[in-house]
Length: 371
Image 1 (spheres, rainbow, N blue to C red):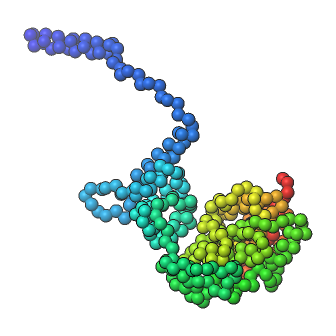
Image 2 (image 1 turned 90 degrees about the vertical axis):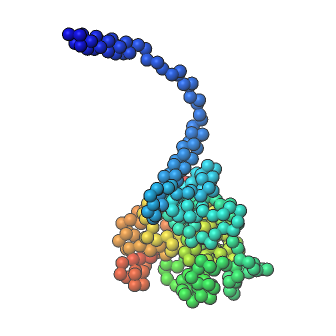
Image 3 (image 1 turned 120 degrees about the vertical axis):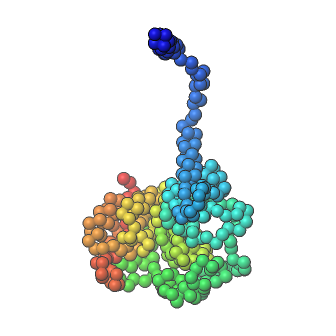
């Protein structure tokens, strides 16, 4: 009897205590102060920095060594510092191994021999590359003079650091292939003669523009290799900058040796010039059917952006499959609504062209003066 009474009293006391806690006002910490209003542009900058650092911090090495304790990789300090100072191209985040390797250097010393690594990142969309605090490597014996003509008798080997190239001299490059742009005997006649309907000699082009009362003074050569087109236009007092990549040959160095300006940018990069300021954009054989269609479309509209009214787009020996030219590329080019000054199509007669049913297109198109 006494035990049952004790259990009853304990149960009643527990219920009373529970009711007390449920009915009592909950103790709350003091309300936090109202958040400060941060301007939108600062919020955007903070979000960019946080996203960059979070992505880099989450990076795991591609080949992890088996250890008992998994340690996070060490992020190069200059990469973290740069991510605070300036946004990094979003495509850089997709290739953290290459990005870490590129930014893992000793500040305030000589830069590594890694131009091939830089181009690997650029071609993957990591452009512009993060800046680095190191001294660029240059030839130890610079020449006392440079050729005054863009078509010199020869290029000086001492102007190039050859360590990253399979060929170690310009004579080697000239023997390897006459199509690379290093054989000056082959380059001297380019853009000056008419051999097939696909050719548009520069004198003829300048006569066309003169007849249309169109001044040609500034131009861009997209994928211009060693800069032969810009070199020849220079002789007609037309300034042309050349976008080019090296691809295991010193294209940029040769363009500069000729007294011209090389732009080390890939085809998918927005042209680094202002709107409506150039008279001519030439797209050489680097612009062809191997470019994804979306990139090709953005490229054409970026060309339209930089061309002034009445300026010219010159597609020089663009190649594609014949069926694709009619069904894909001709309608794509037609969207620009440019005037067709020249439109010539011919079969691509090498082994690859015959096998794939490919054709060449050379087109000279003029941007409308008004829309």
